[in-house]
Image 1 (cartoon, rainbow, N blue to C red):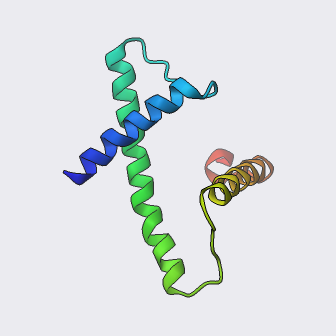
Image 2 (image 1 turned 90 degrees about the vertical axis):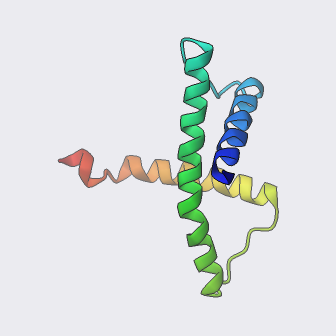
Length: 99
């Protein structure tokens, strides 16, 4: 039940983000299609979060000297990591695309 609530909350948050941020769009033809799209993306977010949380916990258990202090540090850090990863993926193609 908790997972479903989190999916719904995430879907609503995505919908609000779409309303407020000009670069986020849902291109479903109808309201129902848009709602299903938001729910599907929310499920994907939940799955990714379920995988990443244990990895984050593991880093803490290994006593790694890495810490993110607050929202804005996490926000800008995620932006930088995302951009660097994207640029790197352009320079170093993965095996699936080469085959």
